Length: 604
Image (cartoon, rainbow, N blue to C red; front, side):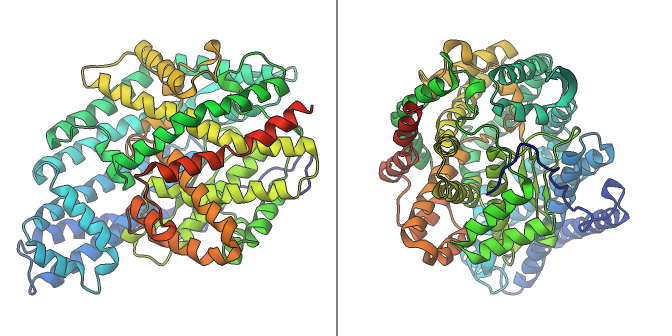
């Protein structure tokens, strides 16, 4: 793989093939109108649905459920398409409005699902199971059964429906307000004697710069920016959490983790087993941090040193060559996966250009009935960017595997969502290490690889610990911005142990991390660590079995839409996630490269 000091601009994605004209698209407007009519048909169907379920009424139930599935998939696109437009241009007000409209449609759809679930509780289990085992509905039985069982633990349908309606312009509006606020933030950044105005997305790339003064400036600018918005961020965070806790109280859900665990299709026992194994082994990362401090020539390890590059730090990887490298090495495991990734790159499914006006972060999203994916990122040419590309292409492949599944059977939990993405990362990094004969480059690659457990075992653990402590305090009243900073530092101290210097914490991490403000997914943290360790277990099996595992891997991904996390692990890996054994082995495997990194560092 060739690398250069200056690379051509990365490509922009193709959204025109979905709806030409962006937020002003007449085709998109027509699609939204069609979706709105479908939603009205759903409302009429729910209202007219027979209150009894038996052989004579089963066809009406089946028709309505399948209609609801189609409309839900269309609404998904009514949200994801404008979100892509907002991501590529945070000032696109028409797209912001369209996304809000889509969220409103989704709220209405959820209300209708609530009504349907309420009616399903009136049916006997025998009649319900007979309906679920029918030819038309058996492929989506898993999702429908989970919805019905959850409905038993919710408020009466009238109250749930009202809550969902109010949430659109209340609860979810806080999320949209935060996204707008974050997207509008700009900072003045000085580099190479010039001062330019950059977005927070561009600022984030500076945190991996080889020059510590640049990293420190980026961190200071980030802190300064969010300190100026801390009052608003605290208001949003408290309002979202207050809404959740009020709803949980009405439903009788005692723990704020009930909803995220249900969404993750995971038990508390499995989650506790994972964090227990991590907490016991995190101190091992101290040897990696000490070696990294030596390489960087620093005495204190701060938050902004986590992604400081070691080894070959001046190399830049052109986007096209990065894509070729990923495809080539993925192909040695699975030709199908490689062919898919080649197609995704050639059809410009990736938005990667480094420019101002874009949102920060990266993601992969699906496109509803188009059954395609689009990837959003900012590609600056670093190896970390290359890994992000591999990560998101893994997500896209996961969506491709589920392409022919009914919409309700294509939804996988966040815990399993990271399987394909991290699997792709691990495969790519090992391929790079395999062809590497330069000690400096090898040091860089090992550093990138060990950064993952550092982040997943400390940074992500911090988020989980903060969420737990924040919700405990929010249950007693509003938590002020200063206290939020205190809770964040306390969480960082527990998660990082002695890895960070006392002066190196990030008190405003609660404000700067958009994951805390995503209303659709509370506790948007532990699934990343779960996915990293679970994917490592899958990858370890792939290394042992070689390309013959490709079909088994595909089958595992295909089941993620219709099984719990524990069921997928047991069926395809033969492991029990509630026991410590799997997690202990997974953690040990993730830390196995530390010895070689330290050895290389000491030889410098």
